[in-house]
Image (cartoon, rainbow, N blue to C red):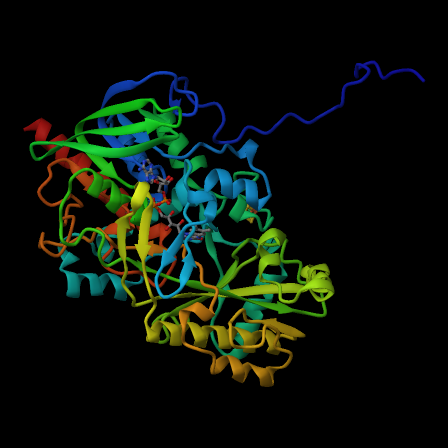
Length: 532
Ligand SMILES: Cc1cc2nc3c(=O)[nH]c(=O)nc-3n(C[C@H](O)[C@H](O)[C@H](O)COP(=O)(O)OP(=O)(O)OC[C@H]3O[C@@H](n4cnc5c(N)ncnc54)[C@H](O)[C@@H]3O)c2cc1C
Ligand code: SF4
């Protein structure tokens, strides 16, 4: 048989690889700490610690205002073309401690944080929520933030982020049955539910946000503000470089000192400011290592502990198709302190929650395509502490209160009831002391009487707040109303560690809006000072 003339023998015909937003960056814009062969010392106008939601937005805002910016990120840059769908290898490379961090208290609660360019936004579900006005009003009334953080002041920043990151409702074709059924069921129960609004440029509903988006549809920071800042030509990112401390000379933040994965010292002098955006857990510890002393540092840590309930149906749900988290209800946010959400778990994670052993487990695993998972995020009132443990490991102590546990139990009971009402054959509540498989709606009452001991539940913490509070009084807060660390010139914190409380809704949008607002104000102050 003759060989086709255009196709040399032995070569496959392949479509050209797509160009992703994290491809083709300006030369020299990325300094990779995994290959750095010698120490570095450079000067920038502003040095930003962390490239997650807070850090990426700050870097882009300041580079857009004309400043030379360095971003220092402890983790690697996982490019879209290198995204893999298996949980284990993604967690090893992209998550802090490979996803094995825990909150320690009466119960050990897994705490997930990204450790890579984009931070937790690489692996999150891209849900965008503005802070409820009652929360912002509370910050003003109880913590005196009203001169700095108001709904009005945040509005243009939320609006710009929504435009730039393409915030929109999950498209009907990317909804999937797990999400659709939840909305239908909530409405049947008599409360409102809706498709999520997300940072989304063409989500295909692969249900794989937790292992990063294979098509860059999800607008995480590694495919948006980080490359956008680098393309302005005034920013550079140092990846796989862990910041050990900020050098404070006199009362001024002078430089950021990091160590590359290859062991070399990276010292970046900051002409105007250092911005700490390393997250609620790491920012307080970076400040502590830098000599910042404050009674409030590491105090008032808060979270939204989340729990998930599985339901096995006779008909296909196909959780693997649909936006990872595509539907929600905030009906109980104020009255009961929880928010309901759907979540699709990849088989490697879902398997860990499937009840049974041996043949029984195998049978259920074979039916994973018939499983729905719905979840609740509890707006816990509990407060914990952030410290640095032995060997530089972050140590967070946190125990939910009895009222928090009542809210969690109520949410769990409500979801179980919704699932049976939607036709589930089995419900898997995952609560110790209650049968691992409930087989009828009558058995849901067992859940309503479940223990209020946090050790009985499988919580997971991904929304983290506090530990470097904002406030006017240096005895009760760490940063002032300009996001500046009390008593240190040129040192700012712009992530959710400055929040005086948790939000009751997903935090990324407010973290970015606060960071953008803080960065714009900082840019104006520096420009005014230089004009004078
Ligand atoms: C699985 C998951 C799903 C989530 N889903 C949503 C969602 O859908 N919507 C939502 O609103 N929120 C969601 N969240 C929460 C949201 O992602 C975080 O609140 C947000 O990303 C926090 O922003 P950040 O900048 O403070 O921290 P991060 O985004 O975590 O970024 C901090 C960065 O700083 C780096 N860093 C830390 N210490 C150092 C150091 N010493 N030197 C250098 N770099 C350092 C870290 O490596 C990290 O990359 C989710 C979180 C997770 C884990
Ligand atoms: S669900 Fe959508 S946004 Fe998430 S990984 Fe899949 S395609 Fe990307």
